[in-house]
Image (cartoon, rainbow, N blue to C red; front, side, top):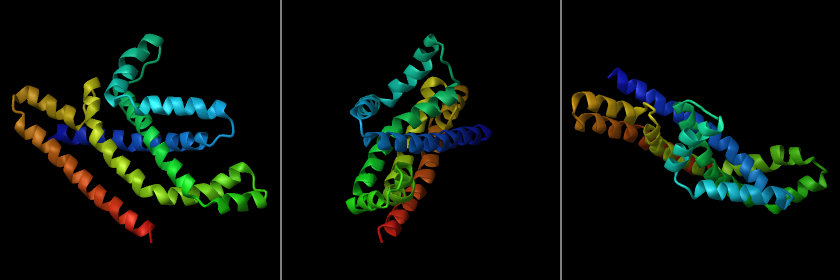
Length: 205
């Protein structure tokens, strides 16, 4: 049982830090999509499309096994967290992008008429409106990230699934540990999905 709790804490840690990274980096991507020069927009589009269209598992292996050959090495836990955060940042970027595009043109025009600096326009006018619109969609990606955290077992991270496999290797019993893992994910994901729905109903009023 202690192994179960240790694994659960690792999974939640990956989820929390990966979510923060994906939200922050996704916002950077989204703002870069609207950069005035194509020399910023084009590389950002290429990078995000590449990340979004390659499997997360391949990215995990690349970061864990290939980067050390270039002198860049992180712990397995850090690698898993970064891989999940960066991968999902390309999805949250599209969510932010949709929210920004949904801000009425009049808001941009008003900011221009008031001669607001670009930074002030983004932080005080555009982003507060855009983010409010996309909170439910971001919540859905948190749930998706939760369901992808077991992939880190492929690089030897002892998350919830990793601890279950370790227990199974000692007892040669697979049904109980894997059932516990499945139930644990349901107990976390289902209430989270209800919370996202409640937020969506509240924010669309």
